[in-house]
Image (cartoon, rainbow, N blue to C red):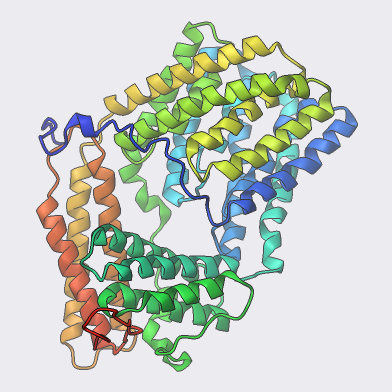
Length: 559
């Protein structure tokens, strides 16, 4: 690891941004899906427990019900697998927490177990790319369970409740597939078309073209990953593949592409009608796509991504442990709040971690004020308490895609109300403890992120540039052949496109890290430029033509 200090290329004043951190953005295209799903998943178990007079068990059913928040962007075949693993992971974390709680009452030991669990959950979620919402929900449940009174004899029954609620959440997550079986693939394809339309409007040279190109390349790559994980290649999926190829062509030849055509196709995909057909890539040209070859190729195992996540794991374990210990030292009765606050901060680099910390603190401060306003209503009775929690569940998912702090405004009172399922508590004490734990968790968590350096980020940039160079050279060799194997050139082009997307993501992550040597920016720029030129050459070689744009200048229609 390099011991070089920060260079002038990465001044600290640029590392701790405040401008834009709290800016409210557009909601997610599918914000209503997790919002409605979590309400439908949480309501029946909680209302059943309310009717039975056992609302004290709601924490265990909530563990399974909250799994309904996951995998809404995945095709249903992949979603079925992902949700199954989420439920099993949730129950496994809960099992470790409950067993630990039943074996010891030492708060220091329990905080240590919670910190280690948080680190494992963070790494597994990042490696498998299971988010959103990622590891925070898993850590919230397991950390809270560590401090719930428990005996070994109660553990199997509590786990059974979580597993049953998780099975219900799985059914909720899969239910939309009965009405719109290709919905996730259609949305991913529409996003790729819209992103490449935005890039085409820059003509490849206008203001912001590099950022638009990177966003379009990432959207196209995400669309391919979605289609490749969707299962059998039905005719609608083949038509979607051809639309993604149209997006790739636009990415390679933005100046010759009509963005209106791309946006028209994207709008048609939003509805329930048939998938629009392209005018230049026939249904008989499927061998051009190289999809069958990719489907039979061995996939990269998720555990191969664990190595680069080591600094994140160390930050999470250290930050969560120190936050919990600090909370205990201050005499707070719920150190898991500080632990969860720290766990929620850790992002791809220090800069993003700082931004998340600001969002978390602001959202929690507003959230406790909202809790103070709502608690008289929630204390009217157990039914009012359950309904308030359902409302905050819905509100959190409605707002969190606009900005994390907005979602926290609803998550905070929901978490406070959940603690009252076992009995109403004094609101002033809850508010004070939550405020202190939030500030402690955010401060200690960020200090841990700074202390645990990630000096190998620059090395990973070098490796990513090498990968782009290798992919580009492979595509160039195929271009030099008179008659390449059918589908080989397309597979090489897609491999190069994926390498370029990975390079851009790696550079952006490394650019936000502290205490590392200067990044090879010139080499990165050269690799990206050469890679995109090669992508354009493969498009021309394959005979793929963009939908010609009508130029309103004196140039007329571009040839």
